[in-house]
Length: 405
Image (cartoon, rainbow, N blue to C red; front, side, top):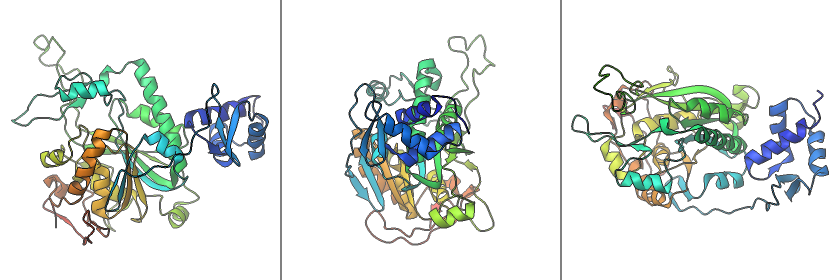
């Protein structure tokens, strides 16, 4: 295939600029091929060699980074876990920096809930939230005697915010594409207003879209009458009340057929709840119970009843490392611990790292979960073969009547 002059150059620069770190010739070649089609590896290698050191720099043999305005080479960082609980390792770090220094093809699944509004976890907006002032966060009123958790107002994002959001997920996709093994499932919690941006951005890196998991849960988002005109339009909702939460499903492309990938990498599908029932993409859920919120106070905390199902499902053979690059208070790691899986969490906010250190062992050891779990399509026997938070051994358990027995 013949490419127009400059096409290979532009593709290389685009990839390294998005990645923000060094990459091997093989990784660069694969990225270029995904963007522009078949291209000889020798053409990529030649372009890199001919333009070093003016455009590119080397961090090692066959490993290049993009020089932007005289930027220093991407440094190789060594990260020390802030704490470990059971089979979980928790890091206080910027996830992009951590991912840039992680060994390639070393993560078997990703389950995460990113700050997909980006601004809601800034210091200013977190201060407003703590003071009950709102800002980006909507503070719902009490309803039926129950206080509702705050929700981000994603309708306030302007055009520049949405562009930043797209760039954020393009880079995340590129880094996850690098560290994930072939066939790795990548589940990203999103929002009906923004999930299309997440999918579009992350597939630019070469990840495949695989649909969505629908978490059926009624929230206080939407359903409001026109602001300052509710009496004039009492029968109108500006947008529908949100009754579902999309979890975008992506996958690093398989290495060969599904069965080949399963044998080579232990990935390439979803674990079935039982031999006679496949994993379903609609999961009935409920708001996170007050008991779990008390253990792990985080505005985006997801319930263990839901997380334990998806965490179990993303490792089709029950083996591998699960990553949560936006770990918050550690609920994904707690679910992995409860099921006996290895997991890694990364959190940039020191406040939530401290919360997670207390919360992960407590959430991991919960045996009473949301009663709706007994009605779930994907509820099934759960193996707990790993070490418990206190180092003991857990036995097999089933969800019965809302309890892990």
